[in-house]
Length: 375
View 1 (cartoon, rainbow, N blue to C red):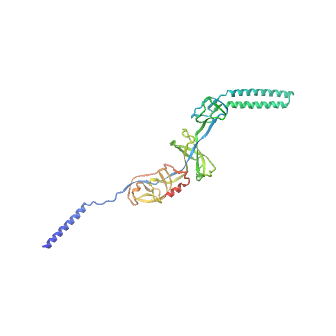
View 2 (tube, rainbow, N blue to C red):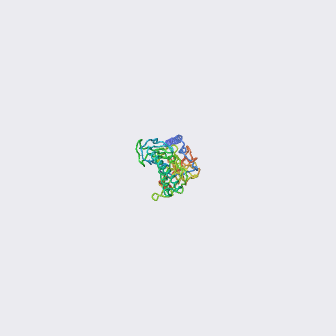
View 3 (tube, rainbow, N blue to C red):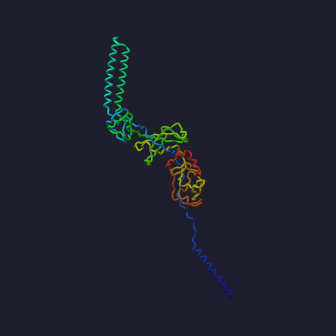
């Protein structure tokens, strides 16, 4: 009897265990694959890369002159308008010329007398009534009087002051009726179209710049404007203290926005690289001693070491580690690890070079070595 009771107890326990096992298996959900990480991808394609040398300089007028008086006298008229454009030959200031006109008349009269005297001496010499020496002295006197007459006319002309060339007038402290002495400053005039950009270049770049090469200028006053220019002069002498040469360029200033003395930012193309591999700078994964990117191969992220060249505003040149057609993670690479399955939500590429790369002359030839040290 006891054996029968134990048997039924064991049978009941086994039944309960089997039911519990199958019920738990029934409630279990099948485990699927891990979800893929969504990323923004970038396809590496060759593009043209223009390398610019960036430096700073100063803008100067092509011509700039402080106009001064060459004769003394009272200011009788001032047609000039401060800050306005003038053309060559425009009257700027008139000095009272009454005394100068009278001086011209006196010299004209003295010259007439000297000419008449000389003619008489010629007749007397022919008649034998005077000597050749007296005739020669009369001729000398006539020539002196002629020179003094011409000088008086020049002084009279100098009472009127004209613009020496097309330009913009500055400001003046001269007033109508003021008495001016010889050499007194009147006003500044500057020819500002085109302008001259003068800037230094490190001796390391002498071989990369040529006459008539294009360049661009930007200034703080007009940050959204780019002014085109061309190199017209390269100083053959290197400054022994700074090891730089001075370069000058004509810069278009049709709208007269640029002014002499402005601080200028110079951008000068020095090299064009064909078929450069450019990637977004945000795709780089920096570490202590190298730079990596996440490359997508068959839907899986792979860590790839890269070597970079010059940088742009938002792009960087890859010189080793990637090839044409490689797909890398542009955004989201910090959320994945090597071997992680990824899903591309969007893909971009560079069809053409949107921005020229920049080298700053203050760093001169240290740009590439600085970038390589970062790798």
